[in-house]
Length: 352
Image (cartoon, rainbow, N blue to C red; front, side):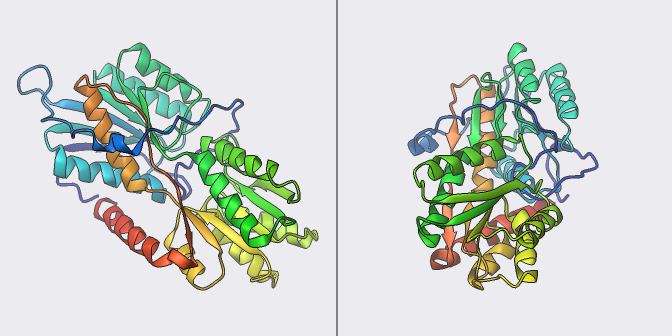
């Protein structure tokens, strides 16, 4: 990392797949509603004042536990926090650790932050159910804790910063039905079962399907955020004679494998494909006509605003959820998202 900052970064050996908010492969029970969307006007809230703590000369300390440091989106979130600290909050101490997609490890990290008496915590939960205890631990200790990108079953977080994953599922499904028609036969590749993004995006799919009774959901199963698993999954579907007009993926990392499976089956152009995240490879596939759409989420805005709110909370300010809308990227507006993706990826290269 190229970090000439007063930032303590503890790197654990990462073993994680590429996707926003990607998590470990356990399947916890239970679901929770997505945090309610705040008004965009709340972005106009004042930036944190000079980050001085109660004691003269003592700096605000922010502890940050991320899922794993090899996911593209985790790098986007984290890079945005590094950049915000470097340009707007040089007078805070920021410690970043990575949980390697292990809920127990993440709980221990939050426990350590509490014992160090940090002023606020940011957590990107590995697991929707199992990481609720980490949120409760911080709340019990009176430490503000902001969930970033993914949610837990706990309602005791101080605020949430992210996108509405149910909206992502709705936008993607609506787009594909508009392209394939009201009698379409569809399949979709799940993310890791039980991960909050999987649960909520699936809810978005189901909400749209309920409004379109003529659309048939032929099959769905998990690709576990993995290109290889997703490729094998779709290969098996097609070899088994599953007749579908489109395949939706909950992440572009999965879609890369699905593209290979569809190409190998000689069905490219016959089966519409949809992804999420606007990965550069998928943006090129949209331009080339191989993929119909991908759903854009602003990883940099999520990371920056998580740190901004954490500093405000550490200063005793009232904060609330900050939700960034998803957007649909198609061939018609591809240039806009190519530019955004290039800026995003350039910042990630600066720190990783």
